[in-house]
Length: 570
Image (cartoon, rainbow, N blue to C red):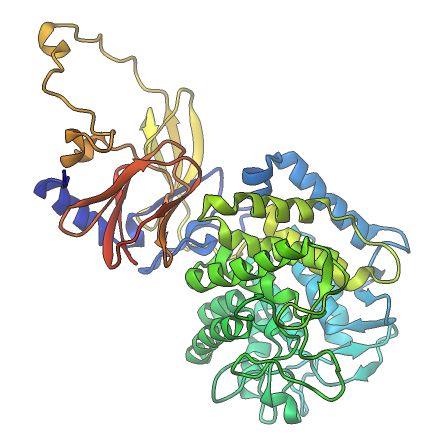
């Protein structure tokens, strides 16, 4: 048996690299700002995961898996906006009322906090400030309680004329209102932040009602009476809670506990075989029956959003990736067996009924993004992305709910949805280099932005000067004692020279229960996995932008990709 090892010098250098913080990562993009200077780029934290929050990478899977162009993707999103916000009376759900505007539930002929907050999220993510302001004006004037018993909360149901039909809240509305206002504050400025902070404060500090259970920090079905004693897993939005825990001016410790509680509750609520969720669940994840809803314990209308919630969290943060991959595997396999034919099920996947919906096509496609680490799942991912892409925009009586859930999913799938962050304190510094940056060679002058050493740069790469003439002497031509360090299983694998490794732009590495995943490395990049003693466990080259390396070993390992090393625990 030929056991190869990295030389002691190389290993010591790599160990130093592996223990480096986020400050040593380099991320690049044409720009990390929108046209008005709002920032959505990387962040510098000591604990780095693979999500877009840390990398600023919102590349659309429609592009990487289906081969869609940026122009095709933007045209698709523009068409959705025109249909649901500017379309005819049989298409639109947004109704412009001058200084105000509302999203209408066509089937129920009312205005709901759910739809209003969804409309605000769609508007801030697509850059439509005018429509955002009209929606927020309507919600403030007709739904928002400022003072009184429900101080800080929103009436969940109103008439088109603005009269209240039910003053109690529905917590998914509160979650989307808070998050859309935080994004609007970071993207556009103004008074949105004051409004967001007021609501966030009252979710914990209203004297009568709390959005989260005060013992386990799980969001409640409704902060009133026995609604405090169970939850709706589709209200679990850990990615939003992550951001609230960072941007809240008060109660940050409680928001952080709510993040963990939401991830745990989603995982417990996913059926162990089908991966489906019940509409309502107990705090231990088991289905919760409720007197006024005979379908509360089944996978119905609310439940389909749960898959989008954890898929979004995987894409934006990646903190809970192992469990989210597990959940996504179960639910996608369930719908694969069903042939994507049915919409409603018992929690265990039996009792199929009704036709697969537009909202499910979108939500499941977002969940399928969790499966990107295993090439064996590529066809399932493509199928779900194609389902979401091919979904016809909805018209008629039932267009409101499924149409908006599909629209929210398409924000994530298209790369439109971004984490709009507080603008960095310092402007990007200028940096000019010659020929190559971060391992990428440039033949023409190229400009882009980079996040390096926790600092932003406007980078200009100028073409390299002409190379010196090649040395054709006998000494230079003598390769008899040299080996190819890029070929695994050869003597060259035993001493991997750091200088010979190709840099990989924005590579991300993490582990699952059975694999190590290398994401964003260029196809053909050399990788090597070793134990901490330098023994090479496996070595090869990437064959896709999301490379899964199946490996049985457990414990701490080094993953060397190009000229960077990552320490992972498996």
